Image (cartoon, rainbow, N blue to C red; front, side, top):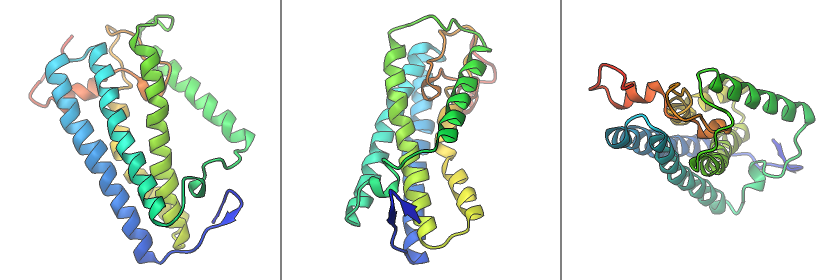
Length: 215
């Protein structure tokens, strides 16, 4: 595996899968259990489905993602490495950047198709946009960084790498699902897809006791 022009040393399957399992456990425990299930429930109980609820949920996930970043740095430090070995600073091809920009614009357009004024600028928006950068970085460095690095270094097939990383995206997709589908009556979502409003699914999943949506 080549990262930043360097040949990565191979790992035994036991060591590599131990790292993968540990990272997956941290993701599901911190982001899935603490942030989504406990955090979303308590936020819903106090603020319901409001702009402030979306803002507080972003802050909760910011704390969780900072913990994930610290975990990744710790695992890399144990091997005498940093995030450069996981791909940080690696040149990116232009087509990849174009695809990412188009995807982001499409995500934003679909968010506003549900309602909201894209020109509105509540004070929460710039903060949530900045938070979104941290959340995205944590996702990339943990899943597509550390996990893919370990799997590739032990010779795991690409198909298995795709399946494993898809499963490890569970806690992160739950966060997006709890934020990105905004109700039309709310203030508009942030430009950043990582900082969108709370969704109907948050209300259904985080509050199973409620059988109807709060309008």
